[in-house]
Amino acid sequence: MAGIFAGLRVIDAASYVAGPSAATILGDFGAEVIKLEPPGGDAYRALSTAPGQPRGETDYPWMLDNRGKRGLMLDLKRPEAQAVLHRLIATTDVFVTNAIPRLRAGLGIAPEALAAINPRLVYAALTAYGECGPEADKTGFDATAYWARSGLMDLVRADAEAAPGRSVAGMGDHPTGMALYGAIVTALYRRERTGQGGFVHVALLEAGLWSNGFMVQAALDGARFIPRPPRDQAPNALGNLYRASCGRWFLMALLNEPRQWPALLQVLGDPDWGGDPRFATQPLRRENARALIALLDEAFSTRSLAEWRPLLDAAGLTFDAVTTTQEAAASPQARATGAIRPTTAGGWTVDSPLHIAGEAKAPATPPPAPGADTEAILAELGHVSAEIARLRAAGALG
Image (cartoon, rainbow, N blue to C red; front, side):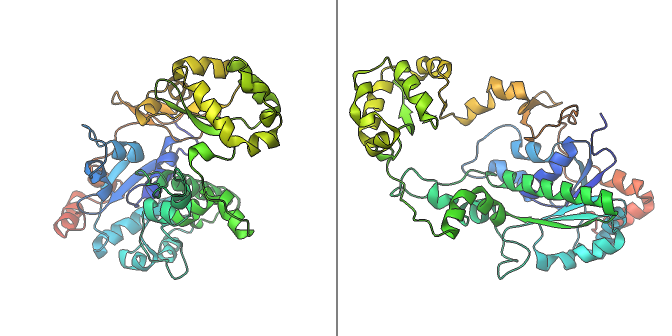
């Protein structure tokens, strides 16, 4: 399989999740991606063993975000290693890093320095808080810069009295990686027209603000915010969580009330309260939402989710179960669309969430061991065995 990006060389010199995930998507569509790691390897390799993370026999996050890449290890704190990288940059199309701005020059990866070596290079920078401003060199993860700082952590909680909602690993990194991928591809399109590469950058904070854009724009426009009430006091009974007799929760979102309200009543067996004047119109249903929630709670508690699901689906009512991660991973729908796809090692992985008709993605092959292809890549650059040995003796190769 060649792929759209066949012949494109990408150096993924970023750590953890957001930057590498953008490079992974380029690799999905045929790019050669070289994973550049420092001595000891990317700290992301150990995340699956951190407290609170799912325990398993595989390094599952490393597989997800580094599948199909080649492994190169260089100690960029050493001039000899920087010289190797610069030689590689001459034949590279995209360079991805999450080094904060003040550290780049010391590692030999300042944007202007790499552009001087290869004017066609697209330099893609991922930061926590942006390239400029008083916090440009502040470190952060998606839990802090994307989730906590953007307003999402404050808003996404059960109600205003509940503790702020905690994020899960990588939750903001992967959307941010999609944004970085979009920036890279946009720059590559410009390069096709002008012949010039360029500098692109995305910040976790910026992606978080975009994800929370509905609410952030409300704040920018001076809108009055309403504290989130408890579930049984929600302002819209038809856009609320309900619990079936089996204990499973599901979320109903009936935005087309003129059609969906009568359909809901029919699914519920046309209950006596269906003709209650308190619920005769949409404004009245909102005004009397608490009373309606109590009635719907009672109605939905009479059957299991397995019984309600086909009835709600047949009526064209918009809802879905509050699904466990294990259920999401085993979803037949996700397998049918390829959102969950097989690996060449016999397992399964999460696919990048974009598809182009007529274009197959590269097979999901295992990720590299630390520096697995270092000597092969150096040989391709013209380094002979003696030179590679000298570099290794000098500590440049980790």
